[in-house]
Each structure stands twice: as C-alpha cells, then as structure tokens.
Length: 497
Image (cartoon, rainbow, N blue to C red):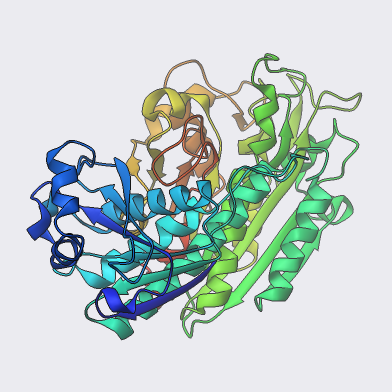
C-alpha cells in the first residue's frame, strides 16, 4: 500500500472516500467534522440525533455527499471520547476504515486525523493500523476474494507535515515487516519447510542490505549444536540455522535477536492431541518476527549493530526422533535430559542463543511461541516478558509500549530452576506443572551466557482466533514492531543499557 501525507482541509481530498473519526462530544469536537456537517446541511448531526450514526467506539457508518463535497462518501468511525484519542486509538480507527474500504473494494482512501491531536503520533498509529488491516490470509483460496487490497492511503493533517511524513514512512515500513511475518506464519508446513524459510530469509537479506549466512546440519554438528539437531532428528526435512547481520553502529554493543522457527510441531514422540494441531504450522512465529524486524531494520538503517539468528526445524515422531530419557549436548557444552519431546522450542533456542553469543551479541532478545502456560496466564492479549537484567528488560517494555504491543513482565529466579534438576544431566528440558512459562524462561537463561537477556513468550499473542478492530483473525506479526523500535532506540541513545 502506498502511503502519503497531505495537509489542508476538505478540498485536499482527492479520493472518493474520506474516513474520519467521530467523537462523542459532537460535531464541534473536530473542526473538520463540523465543516462536513455544515456543507451537508447538518445531515450528519441529524443522523447522529436519529441514531443512524454513532460515535461509540468502533461503530461504523457512512453518508453520501451528493456532490456537496469533493468526495462521494464520508466514512465515519466511532472514536469514543476526544480525550481518549492517542496513537493506539488512531491505530484501531484507521484499521477499521481500511477494513471497511477492503470490504467495498475501494482501492484508495483518505483518513483524516483530528486537528488538535498529537499529529505525529496519530499519523504513526493510523498508518501502522492501516497496514495491518490491509492483510489477507486467503492466498490459498481458489475463488476470487470478497474484499480487495487498499492500494493507496492518504493521511490528511493540518500541521507538522514533514514530521508526519517521516512518522508515516516508518510506520509503513514496520507494518509491511509485520505483514511479512504474518504471511510466513500463515504458510502451511508442507510449503514453508526449514529450507524454504532459509531461502525466504536470504531473499530478505539480499533485498535490504543484510549479511546472510546459513548452517546446514553438518555445520551444526561441527559446532556441537546437539539441542537443535536433536529436535530435527525425527523429520526428513533438514534443520537450518540462519544468521542475518546489520552493521549500523559505531560501538561494540551488538543486539542479538533469536527466533524459534519450528515450521511444524507435532510434539514429537510426546505427540500433541489432534485437535488444533494444524495450528502448529505457526510455531515458527518467533523466527518470523525476527525476520520481519530485520527487514524493517534494513530499510530504516538505525545506528546500531544487530545479529539475528533463526532456529529452523520441524519436530516430528520419525524413526530417529529424540525420545524421553535421551541426553542431548548443547553448543555451550551443557547436557540436557529430555523429559518431554514437546518442549522442543527451548532446545532450538538454547543453541540459537549460544550461536548469537558466538557471533558477538552483547545483549539478547529471544522470541518464541514457547508455552501453553503463558497462554493460560495472559491469554491472547498480552505477551509474557522475562528478563534477568532490569534495565534491558525495561528497554524492551518501553519499546513495546511505544508501538502498542501489549507486554507484561513475569517473574524469574533461581527458585524455579530447581524444577529442572536432573539426576543424570546438567538440566532437564521440562519441570512440573507449576509455573510452566517461568521454568521455560529459566531454562533459556542457562544458555544466555550471562549477558543482558530478555525472553518474549508470544504463544498467546502470535495468533488471533477472532477479529480485532484492525487485525483480522489469524497471525498477528507480534514482536516485529517492538524489536524494530528497540533497535532504533538503542541506535538513537548510542548504546543499550
């Protein structure tokens, strides 16, 4: 979707449809709304009074202009109270507008932000929401889709045009990157194998000026990455360990981003129930988020150094599959007793974290659809955040807050480590039923090398089972915006905490 920012009043609208937020305070809450009402001979106010149009949050309605305005239709989206307007509200309202335009096959749309709002924040939120709303999961349907992409979005502002254009471009880039992650997570496991994922990553690197390297299973064997290789043993598809690098900083600090990329997870010998197993094609959403962030970083060119590691494998119960009771040796030399083969995400991340350290990472963030326990704790609304270095954890949380991705810090500590004590190995890959998300994070901490580290458990937030205002049912691309913002912040502040 092409995005532009224009300043002016109603005469600056060049599309057939103008979308505008409608506030509960009435027509005078927005000078632009008041002007539309005046030129429509108070039809808008009359429609509100009659109950045909509502300013309640997320309600939509439209009025034809019958030649009285330079566009044919005004699309009104309920925005609630004016005092509640912020970037997050702009994100959802603009997303609703784009989804409405898609449903009527409208290829071009103008969206007006309120005159007295934080213009730059409103534009950033509106464009990001619009990009997320302009995504479809129907690429494998043979029938023509009922809706159609919005190809052009114009954001109408009254001030700060240059700053707003900069914010709009950044939001467009981040939205496209999130949609890349969503498209990857929507691919079926028979299409997106580890090898294909690695080639998709190579294409992103080539297109956006990133260094690229991939280890095959022989290369991983040479480096002793037995945890990742153990996960892969049951599949005929070989594992891949992809490294992407962006060098934009002048200091020694390097941010390591590590993504779990299980392109299909059956649970292995500890096989999952059949119900909803088809959703396990999305168990690579962490790696997809990291790749999406690297695409955005390649376009935005922040003043930071980043190394990204994608841990790509399948987890299947083949003849050579790892078994409960097996002992694997990770790249850092620690031995792992396998108690549950369905606790495989932490295994591939163990070697991925160590590999990022070997590539010079001084600060780590891993992203993974790791535990059902995190879904139980936080549902599909909030990502679980675990960290062992509070300034670095705070930096991640601040980046998430800035981008509107809801995250919540969970506890971590040595008390949880005892659950994974093993009689015959350095650590077991599973604890008991208590605090499952925390013990999984505690396992990963063992492989983070003592550097500042944060773990994002996106098991609940990587996918929506029902539509939200600006994100349709399906993959969400969660994590892309937060990781991108984190790297930009580090680049702007010279060095991470």
